Each structure stands twice: as C-alpha cells, then as structure tokens.
Amino acid sequence: MSDTSKSLPAYRLGIDLGGTKMYALVIDRKGKVVGSSRRATKSELGYRKVLGRLAETAREAVFEAGIKLKELRSVGVGVPGPVDAAKGRVLLAPNLGWGAKPVAKDLGALLGKRVVLGNDANFGGLGEATHGAARGTASSVGAFVGTGLGGSVVLAGRVLNGAHGFGGELGHIRAPFGTAKCPCGRVGCLETIASKTGIARIIAAGVKAGKRSRLKLSDDGRLRSGDLLRAWQAGCPLTIDALTQCARALAWGLATAANLIDPEVFILGGGVMEALGDELLPMVRGSLGEFSVQFTRRKADLRRARLGDEAVATGAAVASVPQET
Ligand SMILES: [Zn+2]
Image (cartoon, rainbow, N blue to C red; front, side, top):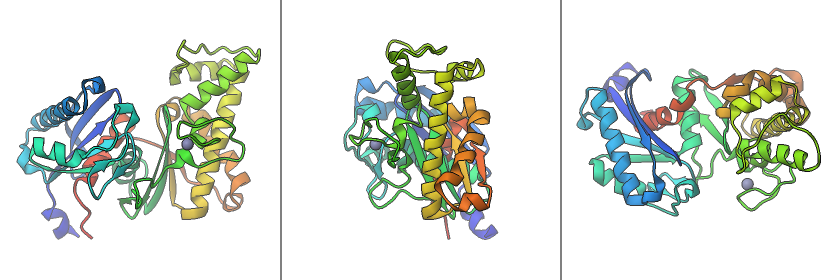
C-alpha cells in the first residue's frame, strides 16, 4: 500500500463547475487544500468561453499552490448534471444551458491534461467519503439538500456513476406522498419536497391557502437557508410543516437506499443542512424506522457533511487520480 501511494502524484486538482460560480482547488494526498481559485461561471457567454474560464481558474489554483500543471496526472471536474464518465461527456446541464458536450476532450485540449468528469453531487459524496465526514468508512450514501436534492453512493472508495450517468440520483426517487411536478416531468420526486425549491413551494402554497408565514419569499419564489432558520426559530407553523415534510422525504430516500445498499454511513449536506442540520437530523432519524425495518432495530449513522463548498472540488480532485487497487 505504501509503495502504491508513493507512486501516486503528490498533488491533485479538482474543479466544481456550478451554474453561478466555478471553484478550483489543489489538494495534497491528505486532502489539505494548498491552492484555490474561483470566479463567476457566466454561462451566458457560451460553452467555449466557460471552458476558457475553467482553464484560467485551474491555472490560478495551480499557481497559488506553487506547483506546475505538468506535475498533475489529470484534472477532475464536477458538473451540475448527468455525465457519461467513460466518454468524458456531459449529457445535460440545464443550469449551464448545455446539452451534450464533450467537456473532457475540449477542456483537456486547453489544459494539455486528461480530464475526468463526474456529476457534482457524486463528487461531493466522494470528497466527503475520502477527506470529510465519512472518511475511513467502507460505504456511504450522501444527500445534499440545496436548490435541488443531489445524492451519491460511494463503495470502497469509488463513487457509483452508474452505467448511464444516473447513479445516486436520490432526488428523483418518487415518494408515495409526493404530489408536485418535478422539473424531470414526473410527479412526486423527493426533490419536489426535500430541496429549497420544494420547501419554498410548500410555503407558497400555504400562504396562497390563507395561512400566515413569518418567512418572506422573494418575488421569484427564492429562499435563503438563513431566513428558513430564523422562521423556524420564531416558531412559524408553515416553516415547521415544510421542514417536517422535507425531513420525512429525506428519510424515505435514505431508507430506500438503505434497503438497496445498506451503507455504513449517511452524509447529509447542502445549504439547507448547513443552516438547519441540528433541527433536521433528529427529524430524519425519527422517520427512518417508519420506512425501513432495519432502523427499528438500530440507530442509523447520520453525519453532517464537513467540507461545505469544497466538497465537490475535493471529490473531483480525488477522482482525477484513479484508485490503484
Ligand atoms: Zn424528478
């Protein structure tokens, strides 16, 4: 093992490409961040310009780390959408306005490096499993509650992308109690409840039905996690109802994953969890036994994500060096 790790490069570079910003970081073998850079994505500039910005951000992170690009074996990039990892193609990234794009080939040509692509939530889970909340565990399932609901499955240090890029799509598991339409076109996906969009929808529906809320939604229906926490602390019944539904939907998703995979650990992350994890975690735990018999016998190992907005880039950096087993 020690011989193998010595043959691996000392540094690795990962990039989190999001709809609004991109973040590149260089980590050492232990996961310590030694250089980073970020800038706005500006997806409105188009595919080629975004690729150019990715390459600049990567170079800056490498410069800050005090190393040379040639010292890196390859570069990992997490994107907001499903990918064909084997072919290095993004299949669809609506937040970037992209359809199918050969990102690995095109960015690889700009950087002169091999590029490894992955879905952002999958890489977030890999980052947490390798250097964060689930470090040292053999298997983990991640749930990331942000604007949408992302998921990840990591087994023996490898993230499950799936044969068609849809591995770990927790957000599109359907719940029997779900009634709202999902952007994917189906009805009742967990993302319609356990996400900021879902919580905002539940609160807006309550207000429309004449209930009072302490939470102010902006005109476009957007919601900030910090405002949610304040409304919860003030005892707003609509907020409490929406978060109770969110926790129950998460429990349904985790119980479904547990019945299929039985992971050692569940990681709960994303903006909503960062703001309200202390409130939500016990609620999720309380509902797990309702949905899977194994949690009537034992307590689930639920852990809050630790890497915050560095998780995706960290996982991308980890994935850039294939595990040598
Ligand atoms: Zn869906």
